[in-house]
Image (cartoon, rainbow, N blue to C red):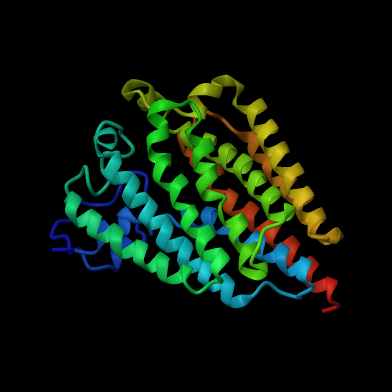
Length: 315
């Protein structure tokens, strides 16, 4: 049976009084929590590299706007695959989650759904993602299927390396390749540079996120860049965000972007600099707030790229 019959309340760090907890039928709420529907920042962070890449492809192709159909497909795919990834991660990490204060109320360790129910839900979400992928050209389909490798290995990395955020970057930045491939049916230096910039950005924002759990992680043996960097987190973030900015700028240059794209990147630097300046690694609530603010950073870059595309064709 797919539907859950038990709802023991929201996850500890979820958004309070979200529509998932107030409007969905009780039997569906645990699945929404598995997919993190009440925390949209996750799929925004997965979506942004896709949309950035689509916007750079529009600039390079001389179009005035990213393909709207592609933007819709990437949105649906990001929501579905982020949910599938979270479900997969929770299935693998149930023993760890049960021992960490922030995660022990997640649906599987809290007994809201069984493992078999979670597996069924994972399959449903993956099939939606596959349906979305099949709307693209053959090159993009093959490229999209290749993304399953970093997605599959990421949850294991926290057990064997201090750099699990690097492997999250491999998975979450894959859209930087997809947006370009969907337009051109191939890759070039621009999307590759965007991909590596996305990896640096992901390591940075997920390091901030991981500082929420560093004490519990130390107790249960989970590794992270938050624990690795420790009090050196701010210099590390400056290096990571700096590398991301340089790589994004190079990607824009290879896409023949104009000054408005670079203005967007510069405005993004101000936002990232604010994150570093105000960060208190011992304030878990603030770490979560700063992590979520990367959704705003995504809008800043996207607005710069889209505006540049519009101006480039005289619109």
